[in-house]
Amino acid sequence: MQQFHHYIGGQFEAGSAQFDSLDPATGAAWARMPEASPADVDRAVDAAEAAFYAPDWAEMTASQRGKLLLQLADLVAENAPRLAELETRDTGKIIRETSAQIAYVAEYYRYYAGLADKIEGAHLPIDKPDMEVWLRREPLGVVAAIVPWNSQLFLSAVKIGPALAAGCTVVLKASEEAPAPLLEFARIFDQAGFPPGVLNVMTGGAAAGAALTSHPKVAHVAFTGGPETARHIVRNSAENLASTSLELGGKSPFIVFEDADIDSAVNAQISGIFAATGQSCVAGSRLVIASSIKDQFLERLKQKAEAVVIGAPDDMATEVGPLCTQAQRDHALALIAASTTAGARLVTGGVAPDRPGYYFPPTILDCSDAPDAPCLHTEFFGPVLSVVSFNTETEALAIANDTQFGLASGVFTQSLTRAHRMIRGIRAGIVWVNTYRAVSPIAPFGGHGLSGHGREGGLQAALDYTKVKAVWLRTSDDPIPDPFVMR
Ligand code: NAD
Image 1: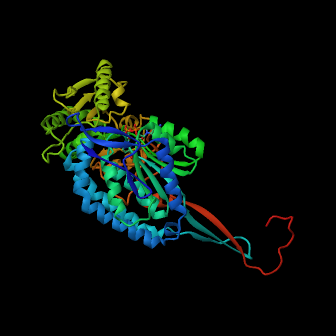
Image 2 (image 1 turned 90 degrees about the vertical axis):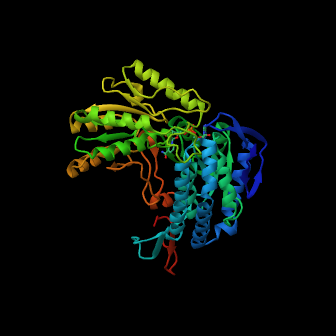
Image 3 (image 1 turned 180 degrees about the vertical axis):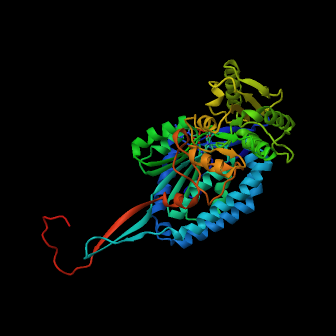
């Protein structure tokens, strides 16, 4: 079995305890992972704090930080095939997707490399003639970055990139489910030339996460995961009063009007819910479809869903691989059963195949006569689409917004005016019009409500890793006047 290591203060360590990581395609253990104890977390935060104040990082110019991030980007691009293989092996995500996604992760590091020396302060036109006042933007301090197992290299790049560009240091905790790609990423990071302790990478479950997010030396917690864990994170941050950014789940509406380009909408819906085996926070998991085209659209979707190639995740021909864990498959089965009991109609799928591993087929539930079916409101995090139909645009918008989440949304129509009305009306952090599941380092990503708060990607994300210091400098040589009057 392959042995993976923590990366603390620039050193690789086997950890005080270990656990097995399972291959989702077979259910068999394939690697030994170190498990962080609260003492390991302490050492990692201490290393990050020491690095934050050490002159070789604290006094490094922003341009030099940018150059190091560029070297990291090149190393990620160079090692993308190996990282993709590891992600596929440990999470079950298909190689077709991991190889393309990880190659693109390098672009996030390039984007924040370019931003490092463009994080500017400001000079203020202050209302006192004998004062110069300006704002310095300074790094927040030690950042705790916590990510789930899905798209982990991408979800950590959108935290590490802007945090290091701003001059912070980071302790990254990979999920206890499938941490191999991030522990391997630490080895690549080690070659980029950053001072030791600037990034520390570890893995472990709730205990390690709680120790990290409540640690008195942590200034900010950047979290991606589920809403229930986010509640723990917010409670933990009551200990250190750290700021938080939360990227959580979704139940994103995918709205198709009768004038949509149907071929395009069908393909986008397939991509929106079955790509990554549905294990995507932005999954278009609620199809909101015009009644007049519902039967035709569902028939096309059903045919495509049943033709999807289910197979080994490391085979380039595979389109849907296994889910990452047994628990997710159990969750999908239970939620489907509760939804059919509530009146949802199973159009296709819904039964786990009889083979080793955590495979689950593309599944469609028609909820047009079951508006209260739990599948319409609960995240599956699997390849399960729930369908509901509408008669008017107002109704479509009401259904789309009938959720506590607010992450992503899709609108398919050829009417420009209707598209604009929907863009205004939809309550979500992302609206894709006539496309779906597109991302870029240049565009902010995030949501509201149960989908969390804060944005990752884009310029603002780098500013969010800084705090403002107001500097007052008196320019008069005269003695300070009346000391009992505030200036
Ligand atoms: P999860 O919330 O169970 O775990 C996420 C991370 O939190 C893991 O590293 C876990 O070890 C850690 N953790 C668990 N308990 C903790 C605690 N008490 N304190 C601190 N950390 C703790 O999520 P998951 O099941 O691994 O991932 C799936 C969820 O992530 C879904 O809801 C999905 O929608 C969401 N997600 C969101 C985005 C986004 O950008 N919005 C992206 C991907 C996934």
